[in-house]
Length: 472
Image (cartoon, rainbow, N blue to C red):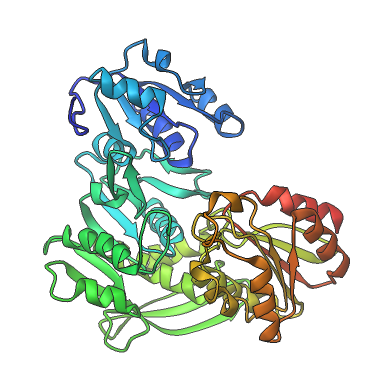
């Protein structure tokens, strides 16, 4: 059997197993743009990804079958979702085909000899990566990037530029069935950002200690001649960076941090803040992306951009034109003066900070929080108690029954009904719903002029956004 790192020199034909995932689809397009002949397969081949890939010239097989490899690809890229008993994976291993994981392919074909700017952390890495990519673009540095969200400024989640920098959203999730290490370990960061370290992904991490070991390996990779930009209000980051070789610059609100937000204010639609570096004024900035957490995300990207020689004036211009990331406090529509927002939040910290961010931008109406526990972690009971404090700034709280709870072993399942009971004990106006139809009926009946409905889920939530707007 060949080594998983055996990427041959003269690759021409590449096949991707599980090509319709967000990351794998982006990689397929990047490889196609680089001039390779690209094919892919997936169990669920449907628009918009299937249409997008075919329009890019990627040939797609529906389902998994060893015959899809009969044409003789030079390399097989195995997606994270692929199990070792997948027929195409079995055929690849049994016949000694060259294979690798998605991050290995990304590092080999896209990063290459360019400088990787890797953004890691439990929270905020998508938005921070997007901010940094847009700053580089405005600065004329023509960056490449792969990010786990759609960037309206670029109308996509990937880009192949001619510049020397590649922005990578560094995912702590495992790499492949043959490589259980985190994806971000496949990159050698020229600049790394570490936004936060909390327990998440309960399907692959046993506990917080397990998570910290993964991030510890990431920090250990960063040599003294590189830069680590790390948040200053996280004890786990303190522990992981103390005594390490990495040249670390801390950012946040702490008085002794290298990068610090000195003053901040909200004047809708602007989120305004002043930044100092080593106690000296660096610049004044404003963005339409709400929340203190997004000011901190912006601060991290400022620190990284400064290392690349980008001026405060260019950074300020980039923030003022930054259009955010789809599914991060994205306005899906306004109907009868009721605003419907979409957000990816699912971890208790993300839920709390998203509600806190949105609240000041809609001071005249009620904030109706609608939450669907859908991830492998949020459907488990690991955060059952923590969720009770995540909704404190919402006026009305709607909690849906997890849609795929049967995936979680009995005795470990999250209870939406119990969460609503606990919220009511805290005098919160909370309601349990067995399905999406019931939420739409309830919210469309109670919503008033000026209200904002904040929908939080990492999935499509049964098309609730458009359906709710129609019902209003």
